[in-house]
Image (cartoon, helix red, strand yellow):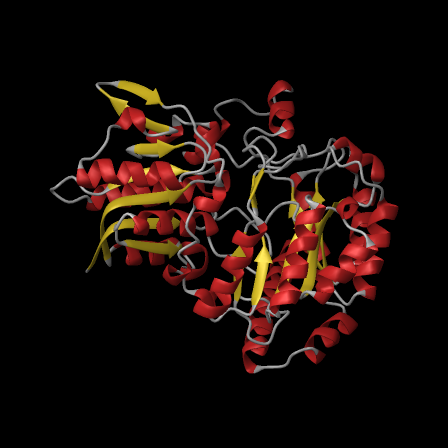
Length: 472
């Protein structure tokens, strides 16, 4: 059995959660926590169940192979049941010395600190966890420091719960680069490059915008890294890992125009042979910037179109006209940059004819698309709206976690969850199973590895198609 100080787990989403996501990105947050812990001489293992396991039993099989003093688990609302399942198993296997301590953090813990103990954890951490988690490890393993000095820590003492004040790191340039050596990088791939393997980088923390449905809309304040620090990380990825493609995972990569211009110019000056992609907003792009981005290696941009109906998009807090999207998607084609349209199904006032408009727009404008139902997340405008209308209660997450309620969705008045699910499946089938579309991607394959990745994605979508037909 492998013995480590720390085991960090990224659980799979719960079984209900359907969505054809590709590529799957590495758990960058856990890799940051691992690198900070390693800098303090702790031994660390990362287990990304999202790519390492196909079912819960495989997760348990892995847990039997590692003995850790501290287990840290990422908690997102759609994985509450899986987290509880993992924690209960660890509790069952707990050894006579009292190890491991179970530490929970992530978006759900940020909004519901007391869920740490309902899930069976010993400690929780609010906010960004790199520094706090490492301080807690020093306290638990090396007996250094004190609990009341650890920022954002949630803990019990003498029957009383304490929640320490959060302290966000303002200079995020000081955080060590993510411990990518602890990840099975070959598990993360992109169809856009022959080598397939991808890495992720984040240039900022927080999002400056407040979209009604977004889980990040009520989270951290916006801070950005120095451009030279980001460039150094890119150089590290190229030299230390077999990675030929980088995805910048910021919600709005081009928010700081001058930063992006400077980064592109440095990539060109250094002649770094790296392809990259990002996600941003259509109103933070223009022809000049796109041309520079493409020249410096950008091959893919994801845009949150959400819906083809301007009125609905304005309701959710995105005041961007469809014409703006049309112009940007056209510029992406001109610059030979792959485009990804992100579509949300089940937005306020939306009807089936509106969703059909969104599907048609995605087929016409974008090279790729991700369609997603409007899952409700804590802290969002949609969550508070449903609670005020009496459609969900404050206890919804406890009820969901304990199988007393289904996961909540935002469902417009003229639609049902069954209709939304059927249209979700229809959207994937109509978008990806067009003969001309399929042939286009086949013709772009340049390596056996790229072909294998193409087959993986095709199988996932085909499985979706089979499930769809069974429901008709």
